[in-house]
Amino acid sequence: MATPSTSNRLVILWQRCGRLPGGQWLFSRILGHRVPYSGTIKARVEELAPGYCKARIADRRRVRNHLESIHAIALANLGELATGLAMMAALPATARGIPTEITVEFLKKARGDIVAEAHCTVPDTSEQHEHAVEARLKDDAGDLVARFKARWVVGPRN
Image 1: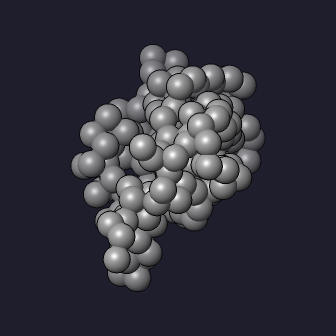
Image 2 (image 1 turned 120 degrees about the vertical axis):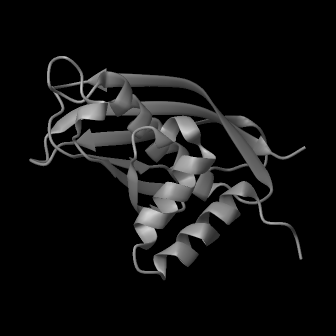
């Protein structure tokens, strides 16, 4: 039997945690420990499937700026986490990917809990190419506060 790729291990861990009480919290804490910088915002992954991720950060003092809104870099961190998880869950065991470019468009002050939803198609990984992933970040009222885009280079493992 082949060794699972990072993406397969990610989905397997999500499925195993999902069977447990507090599974989202447990998965999110494990992820925050494995990816320490992303762990600083204490995001909670609410849904994960190949090509899709929904993650949330709570509005709390540690992620706020001097304007009493959620800091731009905390929003970017949430967008990167959601797009990265969606992409990594979509990659087959025979492929790899790395983000090469990110852009963030801030549309309004972010207040309250923020939810990021990232969607991407499962990429063709038979040869190396670029693949885009986008996350839309919304506040409790459903208003779009930021748009995060990541460009990935994906392709077969060498």
